[in-house]
Length: 145
Image (cartoon, rainbow, N blue to C red; front, side, top):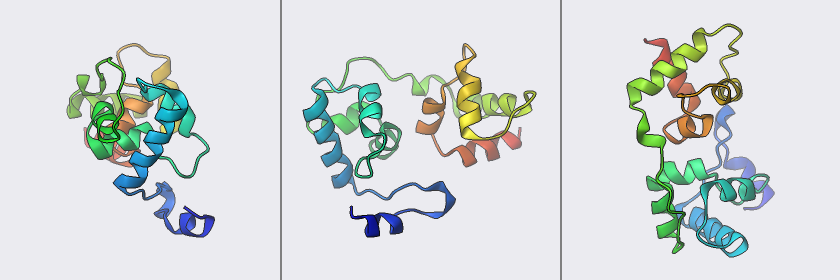
């Protein structure tokens, strides 16, 4: 993407670039060539930061359904570990976000949630939550509890 086309690829304040499936898979193949296989979600996350031509692992998971499915679509081997993102039901996730929002000093931002979750056992990480939907959606769901 050129800088001019990139500016038009953002929607509102969310700043999520629009990538076609082909663009996402091409970037994933580049990561595989540079990082080697099997390609891990964590390694790819570090690789894609600061790049305007690669989607995050969370975006790949949302688009293709799982990390393994994204890697397979790109013709790459994925790491053998099982995703834990489905450990929590939708209701569980909304409940955790509600607990965070009710906690003393909560700012209500995704970054603050991620920091809060890092200090606790038994709650999904920010990355896991993001894989399952947008932060604004989770805050909205949590508000209804």
